[in-house]
Image (cartoon, rainbow, N blue to C red; front, top):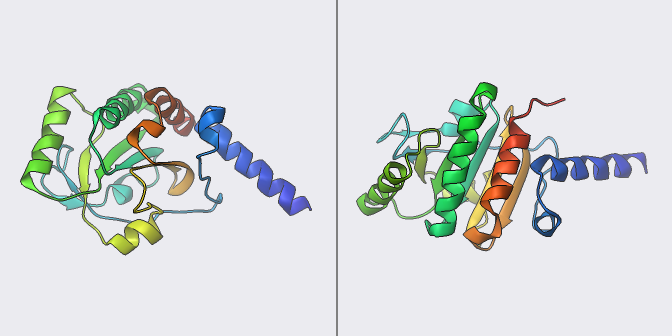
Length: 189
């Protein structure tokens, strides 16, 4: 009984930590408090390692991080990315980090569209990348569903503190994303 109550309290705290509205809370998948991510490779298209394959999870592991995995770069996704970059700028003193992982074809056209997006919106704090690891790791190690368009994962110190999984890039608003960044950036108490 005590364990169940404690577990429910942790789940509620994690949902509150993400600071999402009641309508979105039903879509949240709050992992267990000891959940961790596996290292994964991406091709950096716009960040400090542009043109290279690396593991941003490894680079940012101990920092507070928000990562957007998306299968689409529609207007809703672009709004999320721009809002994320601005929120990270405001939380630089907390060493907040973020990156975006496009789940799709690794082509010159895809890279060009990511570079154009970064230039158009003057993204400076959120590298845009293309996923370059195994599909099995994406699903099993990172918890990204092949049927969903959007997965937002937040972690601190290498431990997942929350996630949102959506049918479309419109399933999570820019305001909700900014609120999530603000919560993740705060030091754990």
